[in-house]
Length: 279
Image (tube, rainbow, N blue to C red; front, side):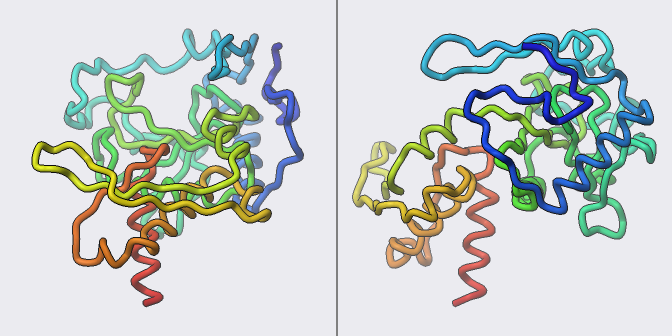
């Protein structure tokens, strides 16, 4: 399967694609991204030459994007996950105005989105939180919250927000998150969509450090809830579990472990803040 991303319609990779919804955010992002492509701001026009679903229960999607390998900016020499920011290397304070998409409710342009000049997918863009602080590529609470907020602005079932750390193929040591649309259901989405309920386990550590289950929470999904995106169900089960066990948790430090480990801290922060404001 090959396609050129000059139109979104060519980005279909799944056999069961449904009609997608769009918010104002989606419309602006797509319009600005296509405008940048028309104005030749990118290093190349995205052209996925081949796609393949790997055999096995996880159904991983692999794509052939030759231009990404040959025409992208040469990556930094990354030797440590804690490598400090180096202002002499390329960083996102050096972006030209044509690469910038939108300012995220910030008059000083410290939190912005910008195109990824070497795209891997349709509307491949970057979230650049606290850009002017010149932070290294390490997840911060502020960036987690901004990533979740950005994700929430979209109505699309196919939007992806991703983070890759140093020594995990991050090529620029300046804090950034990736944002793009991929019309292929991820494993977590499939698992949740075929499920019928929510569930959580409350554990406490023994003297030897092993976590011991002490209580369980579960309930059946309502019909309207079963149609929600995986992200919303992750939020829902965290919120309901915290409320269900609040008598055990109030006044204590506790940790939430979720399938979506990359966003659980931001979700917990937002949920508790919201709950405390309502109380």
